[in-house]
Image (cartoon, rainbow, N blue to C red; front, side):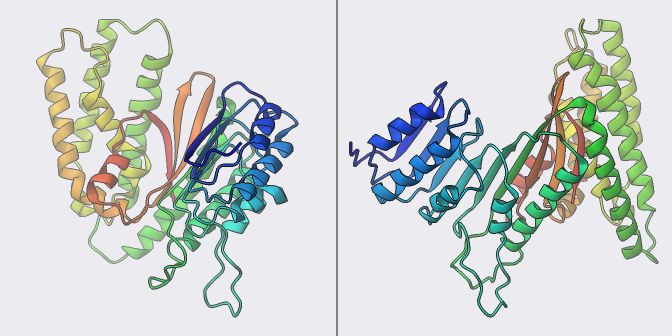
Length: 373
C-alpha cells in the first residue's frame, strides 16, 4: 500500500509492537518526514525496529523527526536501529524512551584535526530528547551517561568549525530520569560535589579582587532554597489536608523575612551569580509571584511582598543573564508526586536571546534541586 502524500505518521496507542510490525510491512511512504511511535513494549521490539528499517528503505523517504518516547519499543543499539539512522540523513529531531551507551558514543563527533575523520552520525541533528527510566538507578550509571552526553554536546557545539556547514549544531538536549524518592541522595551528592569544585575555581579566578567571598552567596542561596522549597511549599503542595489560613499567614511572614535577606545582596560585589541560578532562586521567586495559593481575601501585605520580589528579579536580571550564558548545562529535579521525582538534564545553547534565557532560569516550576555544569 503506497501513500504518496503522507508526511506524518502516528503509530500505537495501546497496541503492542506486533500489531505495528504488520502495519509497517504493508506501507510504502515516499513523502514521510515525521514518525511518532507509541506502543506497549513487549519482546517484539527487535521485530518492530527491523520492520521500520525495511519500510524506510522501501519508501526511499528521509525522516526529519522520529519520536518513540512513550515506551521502550525500539531496539536501541541494534544494527537495525543504526541502519534507521543511516537511512535518515536529514533527521533533525530524535526522541527516544531509553538511552544506549553505544548510541551516545556514536553521536560524539571526532575532532576535525584527525587525518581521516569518521562519517558523522545524524549530522543534521538539532534536538535530542531522551526519556530514561534506568533499572537500578545508581550514581555511577548517572555519571557515565551524563559524562558521555556532555561530550556529545561539546563536540556538536564548541567542537564545530564555524566554516563547516556539513554538520548542524545541537540546539536542545533533554534527558529525563524518573526515579524513586529514596534515591534523592544520589543527585544531591553529585550536585554538592559540583558546587564545591565550582566554588574553588571561581574563588581562584577572583583572588586578589576586592569582591565578597562567593561562599556567602552560596550559603544564602542554599538556605533560601531549603526554607522556601523543601520545608514549606513541599508540605503545602503534597500533604493533605491543605494548611488553614493562619498557617498560610505564617508562611507569608516567613517569606517576607527571606525576601529581606535577599534584598540586602548587592550582586555587583560578587564575581558571579552562579549560586542563585544553581539553587533556582529566580525560579522560586517567580513561582511565588505568580502563585495564588492561600490568598483568598489576600492582604495588602501579601501584595507588597510580591511587588518586592518582582522588583528584586528586575534588579538581578542583568547579572543573572550575564552568568546564565556561562551555565549552558544543568540538572534540575522536579517533584511530580509524593512517590517519584523526575530529574531533568537540559542544555541551553548560548545562541539563544536574552528573553529565552531569562525564561529558562525563571521557569516557575517548583524545583527541589538544580545542578549546573
